[in-house]
Image (cartoon, rainbow, N blue to C red; front, top):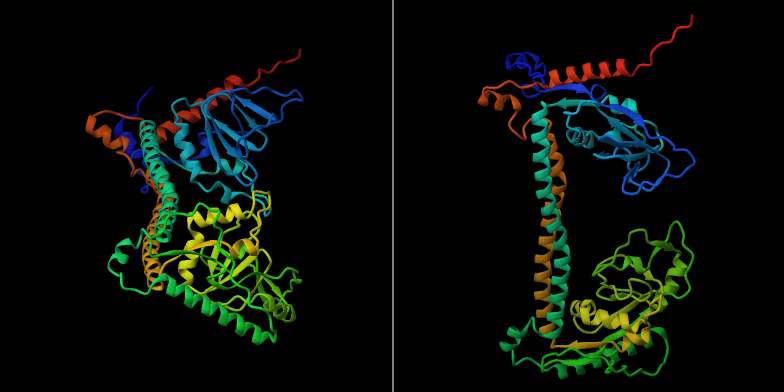
Length: 492
């Protein structure tokens, strides 16, 4: 290959924003674009030959066959503007455009990287479904580096992308690890292991039996107050015993097992007859509004004042109540009610009003053992259902009131630490996502690797500039066009 002298390269660098030896040109000067086409009715067996369409590698059989290294761009659809590089024979559907070059030493991977960050889908025409056509592709302005520099840029980008992917893979694993950490913390908290050292220094506290007597007294008082407010004289229901058939985990000697029914003044569910929704009114929450630990009001249905008051007669959620999803795939998901506007709930949500520290009670419900117990109690059918009576017999480990508060304090501190780590991981993930684009931007400004001009000076050699490469490609294309032109046959 004929090399242009270095002095000429300096004269041909006409863009001050590009490194020496680079040149701006249009994609039309480098690539010949064609659209994928329909094959005849006979279905083709592609076997190991990839098939590309607007959504990437696809399974279409209406395609065009390309047998040389090819750039492939999604033409229409949600992934329009996506750019692929097929270095072997490939089928291209009518949902994509493919581009080839007769210049064997033009690095198509370099151009693929360029097109991938050119925002082709933002250049697409039409007010409806986005699309990319050959005119848009031909108009892309290409900052072209000399050939050897293209190769070094492609290699460096590949190496850096591999490192970024390794980092991204490790970051992806951290949320799962943090979830496992939170579950381990709850398991340790509700088994007494988390506060073992605390109990050693607090042996003179009131016993758990005394706490249970106080809880039962509060339960009876709550029942009497409720009956008096409702103007009813109903017999007080003794608490249901906890499920003793379960394989209960070990707890400290100072703790006792009790039932959720014993430790709550009320266990019920929401309105059984769904009132009609209105454009205005008061919120009625469903299972989707019960998240892990908190309640949301996003897209809550609204009901009339009359229906709202009727719903509250059965179940009126208040601050520090616990809500549990009782029907469907998310059965067992639980949240605590914090300060928020009044709301009603539907039948698929249970309400528990604890007489012990609510945050401790929620921690137990969210612990691995209790969650598994609820899953088992809700049945193995396609539509799990955790009923009120099953919830009443839920086993609950009961420590002293002081230890409950200490457990909540320690769990909260550890969860806040996990939250901070999660925030940092999210920030790092966003940076990793942007890093590839930052690398490509540096690459196409000539800042990623030493320029060919710099290396040529160091090695006292000539090199072919980008402008000379473009001129050679143009010349080769014109020659190819002449040789493939059909001869004219004259009639005598």
